[in-house]
Each structure stands twice: as C-alpha cells, then as structure tokens.
Length: 333
Image 1 (cartoon, rainbow, N blue to C red):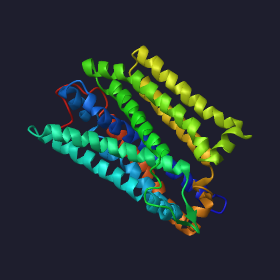
Image 2: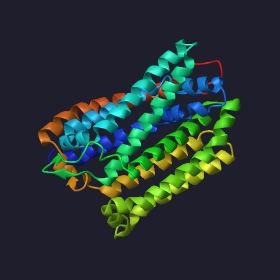
Image 3: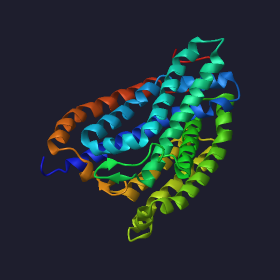
C-alpha cells in the first residue's frame, strides 16, 4: 500500500460520507423545518410518510463519518469535541426528538400537535447546530500543541449563527423540492409555491456568507483571490444549479428541482473543501498532521471497503422499493 496515500483515501471516504449525510438527511430535516407552515394536517401526513421509510437509514452516513474521523483522524476528535461539545449535543438532542416523533406521531391522536412540534423543533435545532458547526470550522479554533485552548462558547458567533440559519434555509429548500418529487395535488402545489421563496432566501444568505467569510478567515481570501482561479468554477456551477431550480419550478418539472438543489449543495461543499485544503483542523493543521498511524488506517480501510458497498446497496434498494408518489391517506405504515 506504499504506492497509495492512505490519508488522502480516508479524506475522500469521510468527505463522501459527510456529503451523503447532508444530502440524504437534509431533505427530511428540511421537511421538519417546513412542518409548521404546511397548509393542513393531511399535508403533514404526506410530508412525514414521504421520508418515514428512509430517514433512519439516511443517518447511517453520520455514523460512518463520525467513526471514520475517530479512527483515521484522531486529532480532529481531540480538538473538535472540546470546541463543539454544546453544538454537537444540540445536534444529537434534535435528532433524538425528531426520531422519537416519527413513531409516536403515527400512534397519537390527542397529543399529535406536541409530536408535530417535537418533529419540527428537533429538525430545526439539529439543522441549526450543523450549520453553526460548519461556521465554527470556517472561522477556525484556538489550538496550541494539538489541543483546544478556547472556551465552551467560542463556536457561537454572529458568523456561525448566520451559517446555522443558512443551513436551515438550505435544508428547507431541499425538503420542498423533495416534496415536489414525492407528492401531488394541493401538497405539491404548496411545495411549488414556497420553493422560489426559499431559493431566494438561500441565495441571499449564500451571498452574505461569501462576502463575510474572508474577514473571519484570511486564508480563504488568499485561496479565492490568489492564483488558483479555477476555484471559481464551484460557485459558478452552484449558481447555475440555482437557476435550474428556479427554471424547473416555473416549468413545473418534478424531478429536476430536487436534483438541481443537490447540485447547489455539492458544488458549495466542494468550494468549501478547496477553500481550506489541505487544512482539516483550522487554523493550520493539515490532514497529515491529524492522521492516525498508517497501520491503523489500513486496518480500518479493509473493513470500510466492505461496509460502504453494502450501505449503498441497501440504501438504493430502500429508495427503489418506496419509489413513487405518497398520497393523502396512504403511507408505508
């Protein structure tokens, strides 16, 4: 294996896992954020039924990414967890509330409104926490001798609050376009109606964060306005994807809005990676600084090479089995 850089291989695996989680859990978190604004209870039933068969499988990627980080890049854990304890706790608490609400809402009648709130609040808190963590990562951490030396709330700044709210808006857009794909009738009409507004909100937040980022992290400024001009292809493709969302919604396409929204996420994610590469623990610790021993990486890699195809296979099978429209009064239960 000497001819391969195991650190780069693991960076690719974890990066892929994180992107899969954001895309696949993002739309059901987005539906939770949109839950209070749905036109009626039938619409909420359709929203929840559209993701009920797949939501728990989607979170497999979160487990894969977290376990991979611990095994392949232990420095990330030793810095990120002390820096982000509260943010990670809020994310996990939100996911727990959201997960419990999935099952109890189907059984409850008298207290259904409280399970609606649990689903919505849990989704919103989890999405905000994830976005705030991304904002904290962009800002960087106070690290000395490979250890975090900052305070418990250093991650919570106006910039990270904005990135948290921005990810909530982005997840809501992903949820709305998923609903266009999976619903029909008045539920789909409502999703078509709100998608352009959500897209506009996402673009505004995206523009503010893009302007603000170089001021919170000068490294990003150097990367974007230095000699690496090809980096601008990523925001250009993200904006093109946004245009495709708008155009396809106006034409009342069903599948293209969701695919184009995925494009916004993918190209924004790639732009973020290139902005920081090869730093994994800001401000200046690279992938190789944070990596575990090659023997450990190789041992873990052998297992992961078996696990990932299995995850991809059962995920694809689940989406195939539960393909098609979700109608009012129907659900996988």
